[in-house]
Image (tube, rainbow, N blue to C red; front, side):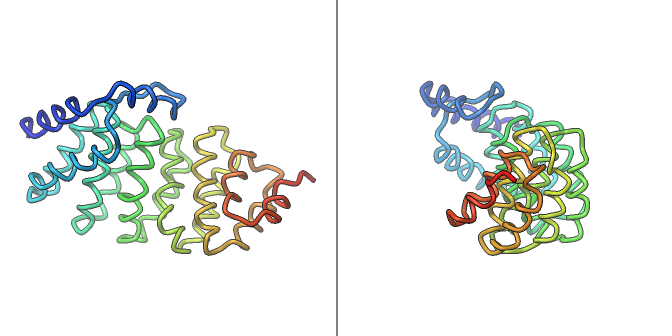
Length: 236
């Protein structure tokens, strides 16, 4: 295992660019640890080493994932995010607890959170719909990344018009959260849900606009026609 990890890190170090490292930081309010490697190149490195690990047992691949996460480098977290959905056919109900613990231990910026949840947790929910009850409980966590995770894990199903009642339930639970990254998370979820359920999302926003933070509201209505956006933004 150590040999593969060392080679991954050597490839990342050799691909690093100081200008990318500096520009990357602009997207985050917290200090972010990164090599400075373009996202597309990180994906190529992830695919290169996936060929070496894909035949291993799932538990061993999970160990690789934890080892990469522990470095705290964002690009190494991106490699985990690339690998994990490829294991979807091996997911088991108990894996959700592992995912939850990884979010609590290793996720410390929105890019790591979204990269992990959009596909890995989203795929997990689609395979085990009963797990959504536990994911919705993340909205009650004291950990802000778990709260954002509850929302962004449903981004892909939301685009397909699925789980609308659950999406509104998650938004209800997070509605007045004071963390702007949580607000942006559930606002983004509502925006994606509006692609196929525009009227329902619009009605939800208008019904709650007196208490919904403007950050979340702006995200939620972003894809709507100009007249609906104006109506939603109107202060009563």
